[in-house]
Picture 1 (cartoon, rainbow, N blue to C red):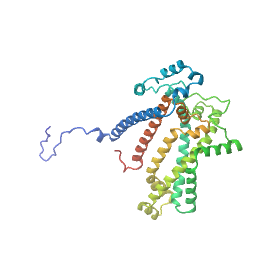
Picture 2 (cartoon, rainbow, N blue to C red):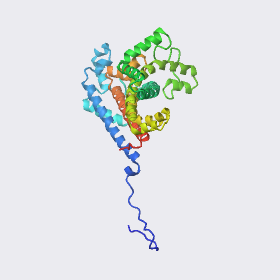
Picture 3 (cartoon, one colour):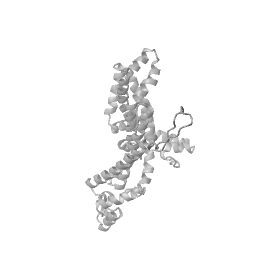
Picture 4 (spheres, rainbow, N blue to C red):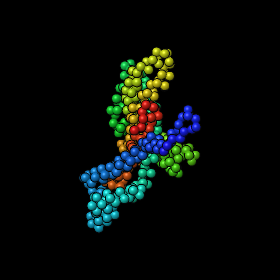
Length: 365
């Protein structure tokens, strides 16, 4: 197209509008999210292939794991079970039929519960979230504060004690700590319930979020909410101790690196209060690697903590996945695996987006 000029020869020419910029230039966030969605779809497909293949090569037979001895001696019962769950078909046909159902949002039916896997996940996942959310909030608060304290007092007695405590936390097996806490606070002191989500005599509140403490509070059942909160204390305490130990080491290492920068030394030289330097300069600059570790820790908590959930009788995703694997329940195993993969993918996406908010120098690619 030609350009237009005015009658005044000194006036500047006006260029005609050119082609519209591409989406990636106008909306980098949308382009980034679209790319991540494609990667996520490929990742979930790979998880189904890997999980399906691993279940096929694991020693054992779903028929033996799910039928009683009497039913196993009945050829008709065995044949009916195989036909019902498609086990009489070749593996590639089983996988193809599973993908067809998956594309329509159907994760199949669990062999052990007889319910849809989606329904099982909606029942077990909120219980795990009720543990994971308070655990992560407490761990972030304590881990960041203690890690910064260790970094500021590097080489002093406080730092040495914190490092020893973090090392002990990392070295302690979760099942052992769970048993010790349960023995001390329930058996010896009687300060906490033994396990489960509610005490005998209480019925679960109407489901809104699936988290008993929240649902009971929303319905005004404060006695029920208090009982549910008491059952949360011990498992959250164990998980918080283990998560704090991880965060303290990374926070301390990250903050020590930031403390060596010239602008931190200049801030101290200007006479700025230590609290101001820590809050405005040290904390923000050292948070990027800490966010990565926190995201992975939170994803791990949401994926289910098998040992802790089993010891405290907590009906969460970890317990569901363990029972499914023991029974070679293929639809349930695949459903739990897909959920775990989706959790890690979404958490990593959230971490990447937070990078840009905390440190403007980081750009999404």
